[in-house]
Image 1 (cartoon, each protein chain N blue to C red):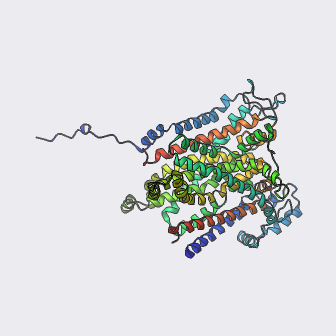
Image 2: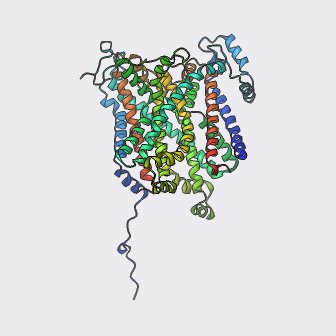
Length: 313
Length: 294
């Protein structure tokens, strides 16, 4: 296990290096002089000179990368040009909001996707299976920002049951907080539910065909006991680890969902930064997302190895 | 007595079905896939024939027809500055389909050669390329596309480039995996033994094996690219106003949701239908190309 862990962690190092190079390299895509592009419309010479000095733009590229990555390693992700605050603070401030949204969305995805997948596998090739499979395809094909707009139209504009937008901190009012997050969490969780359903269905089908399930059936156990206690336990292993990989889809989707429901999270931060040409914030947010994703993948792999001894060697 | 020359036409040879014929036959059996293809072709026709069939100029504003609900004059209604929504849906299909085609072509053009080289050469080259691909995959797809579009500047072309780059690693991974599978097959060894140069082995003997899974992936990636273009345009990073795109139409519609809900209905429905059809077709194609099914 230790050898597996060490090898798996060693593999992260080059990935992290390339991620940082890629994100640093984004700057090079800016047309013309980056200092001019970052200075915005005013083009104040003092600002340009300041930026050139601050980002060491007069130094060669590898030196600039080294200086930048040194800062990142010390937790310095740069500073927002518009809001004049460290990127780190902005990210830490928005993280809990998106975290709560993502957590609720994952909850929605699991409570819909896993039971639907079990049912589809158990009732294979019946109307239920086709229905669930079709619903999953719909869930994957519907643009989540459109679904959000439709839900606002139905539940806020027409019925007036739920607030259309805004965010209330759970510290202020937990009830209001949950009310504002029901629709966004459903919108965000919906597509992941579809993926989860597909994973659960195929994992269950595989397990239901196996010898030990036949043995359990032969012992005369009830069908529910066979499905839930014997089959599901093993089928859930790949589902959970594959679920961790959906974290990326969750973050991508959060950007759009937060935009539709005006939720002040991570996604809103990056979109606003893009329009304010606040490039340091864009880089910081992308970097944090990639770090989080790499770490989550690592945990998923370790969890998978823990329950599946064959992978440890 | 001399032997008669052999009359080949007399020999009874069973006609062998070419792989593509088999695929077409399999595909025809799958009604949902055929239905998907029909809808996709419908949208393609819409995009090509837009100048002929569009009832109005998609950019023509009319202050006397601001936010009119659907009527016989404007079947899909009008938008906030009196433009015909149907005309904008028809012309907007061009942005979506173009995004599907251009992004995926870019991803194929970069991803496949890199995958071929990486898989065939192996060793250090493969190691470095794969770590780079890992790094790209570590950044969530849409966030990478947003970041690229942000630095390239907002436009439809840049959005397509950003989406294409973000999709490249999937094709590299797929190609490389397939190369590793066939690389040690005997016919490849045989091709090498008779002295074929490397490029010829890769292009003539390895590449044809990879085409079927690439076709399936390209179809599904086109669906993802269309959603991504709509997403970027929705955020304001794709098609710029006043040119029509379904995503940017939804962005505007969001602000008029209570006064003019039809503005939000049609563009979303169009994206949904096109993407669903591509997914159905892609799933059917995957099943049809799978030799284990029949």
